[in-house]
Length: 161
Image (cartoon, rainbow, N blue to C red; front, side, top):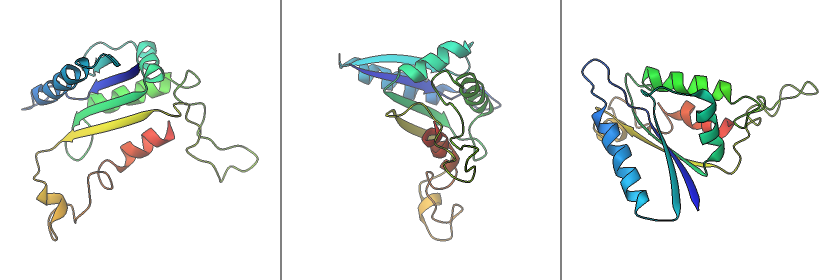
């Protein structure tokens, strides 16, 4: 049975009610629940979080699905705090051991100290931008994809762990 951990990174802030990402999470759970081959755990970053339980969800999961809006070209502040807190708690508890380098040669192997080997992840982002802002010459993102631009660091974070 595949174990799937779904994280809703949406939050209420200013004129955003966080409803879209909750809907996407609900759709994901509903869709996956129709298949008995999946065990599902969820987190909404606005809920009260037990850090050790969140670490255990990452360690438990075969697949981690992140649903998040992008605000001002970054993750919402509570989602970033969630990742910072949970991953820090996960040091030597299944998320990462070190940054991967050794004292013998500290110039190599950076980013290889993660412990979540074999896990897969999926990232969905919602934007208040048309697709053409990323694809048309001369438009705002200079033909740079979400993955190679704004979310590059997020992908590296997952590779690190």
